[in-house]
Image (cartoon, rainbow, N blue to C red):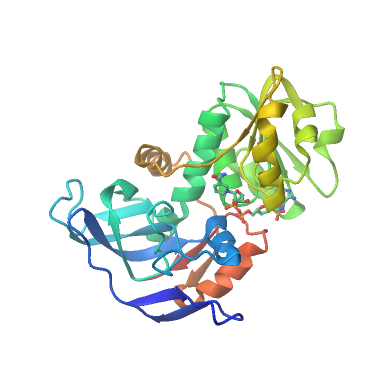
Length: 312
Ligand SMILES: NC(=O)c1ccc[n+]([C@@H]2O[C@H](COP(=O)([O-])OP(=O)(O)OC[C@H]3O[C@@H](n4cnc5c(N)ncnc54)[C@H](OP(=O)(O)O)[C@@H]3O)[C@@H](O)[C@H]2O)c1
């Protein structure tokens, strides 16, 4: 099969479009013919750190068609259209085929294209778990989303809207209209205004890609407010992991999210997309052979929504 393989010896093009062995599914695995996959920060962060998956093929989000199933697989059959998040099952999405356990897949909503379906899993589930679990959001809460322009941010705006929140989004000028269309009530351009210097306080702050200090975020919370760090600069995340417990002294609670692959949450995201309550925002679609270029674009940190790889 064709695949994008990690080649450490090639510094100018660490990912190479080449031939690789087609995986053979074990008795509890499904062989999926991948039609589309999408890029996440997990891909380029692991690439930068020099930690490729065992298969040497990156790519967590996939959408495709079941080609064959092992004898112990219960819920899928050949021909089923599926989507999934392979971040906890060794990646492998930047290829024509992958073998994966059924717990990492759900059925694809018929009304979504394979490209749309591949944009959903990791970013959608991350946004859901941040808002619902760590954020413990209540109806009519005021939510600030710092970094509403990318994959996770665009889903976070839409999920917060479904839950009836009042939403403030922080983004650059190029994402203002998009944020409003997705449901933001207020949008602040981070190049023009610093929300931490205003009097407004929030029930919940999601730091998707923000770069304020933890103290500044905490000061912008109401009493009993919650802060959830989803992403940002590497050192900000490491610092937060050590400091959030200490900073949670008092009524304001600070959290760092570690999203978990979970078929129940993947089903919720798929259902929300099927009903049209959320929609994947796709800025660019690259062919499989240009995965390296796509990865470099996303790694610059300013993708608008998701960047998808079309495999078939
Ligand atoms: N905790 C977890 O389990 C988990 C899971 C998934 C992802 N993440 C993390 O979440 C973060 C976002 O992931 P993603 O897939 O959404 O990334 P992404 O799609 O690459 O995010 C790009 C977006 O970030 C915005 N941005 C960049 N700098 C910003 C700033 N200073 N302030 C506000 N917005 C800014 C950009 O908007 P502008 O062009 O408007 O600046 C762009 O639209 C990453 O750091 C990722 O590692 C964490």
